Image (cartoon, rainbow, N blue to C red; front, top):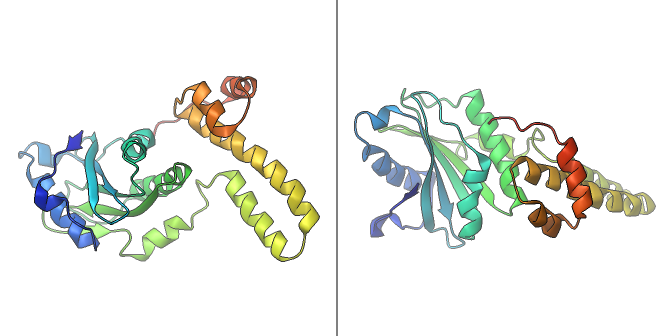
Length: 224
């Protein structure tokens, strides 16, 4: 659900506090029943650091909101948002990120890179205070995490290191193989998210037959 912003909320974002001030207002619009549920929002940020949109992605229970990466990135792609900020509330009013919070942030950082969008922060908020991943060392650690990095990206980094060491012939062969693996990994990711096969063909350059084979052999999609 897209959140309607007033003139004062279409501001330039200079810090996590700027986002919290606005998101606190939005959270407090909820009635007593609604505020006891966990909400997950995405804030789109433009090239000039102004807020483009705020979208409620998920409204869950008192301790959980199910988040689909497709929904998180859909509006960012539509509105050409180069950066996004993730925000969710903890009805318990504790600010310590759970392991699920960390894992989801890690996954979304990597998923956003596929569509050339940058996750720049994740805020946990309550009516009285907030926690910013970016203001802590945690966000930098997640940015460097390899848990959800696609294989081809790791291979590209390894090839770059080899190039610096003068292994030119190996790089040429590795680059070709890496490009193919890159296309296959992206295709698998898009298939798991339900993207149309014709769109995958256009995006990756693979043939429709190759995409069809991947669709037959791809693993079952897991819930977030």
